[in-house]
Image (cartoon, rainbow, N blue to C red; front, top):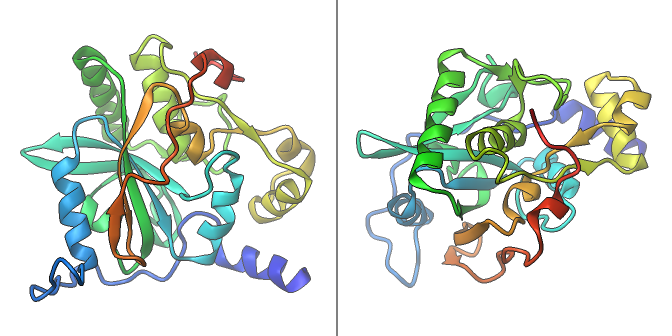
Amino acid sequence: MKPLFLFLLFCGFFGWSHQEKLDAKPDSTATADDTNPYLLIREGQKLLRDGDLVVRLNKDPLSQFIKNFNRQDKKYSHAGITFIENGQPYIYHMITGRENPGGRLKKDKLSSFAHPKKNAAYAIFRYSISSEEKRKVKELIHSWYDKEIAFDSLFDLRTNDKMYCAEMISKAFAKSTGKRIVFGTTMFNKTEAQLFAAHTHLPLAFVEKLKIVSIDNLYCHPLCKPVQAYDFKKRQSSIQGLPESPQKEYGAYTEKRYE
């Protein structure tokens, strides 16, 4: 247990894996029977719409650890939200570490956000929101981007000047929909709390009471539906295996409503 514990601390917490080159070219000789993973990026890019949630699973060991914070679906470890700009979809997301040393809200093309050399899988989800709600979400995210909102290393939902990936998305939808769409929160178990506290240098007593918005809190929701999932290892796309929207009152999924 001790070697694993030290290894986790050494690796970092969110996406701090070795930075791969992002300008690799897809193999133009790939066929439908031998699907080039870059073709799965192209396919997904055609499906993206304003307001779509994009989630991914990075290949680094810490992402395998992070996904276990999810309680209902443990397939993904990071999330961003899509907006179409000049005909091109961009994923806005909060991350720190080697991928984003400055820790500011950033935007990436799907080919970078879900790059096959760095990620094992990604998926697209879509919320049931009106055009006006979608406009408000986009306007709010853009305002945070202009303000260069930073990554929240305290993972504190009570503050709005810094946010982590799922927190940003949850607050954007709660505010833009007049709290019509709100998300549940997750608490760490004893082992998770100890590891998290050791890595972040936060007091264990604080972490034990901490509520976070986990990645699956964002899409295991009655007002969110799966669009498509992509598995680079299997080199296939499928909607099978994605969690269906739970048929329950969405208020039951909320432990904390944001102001």
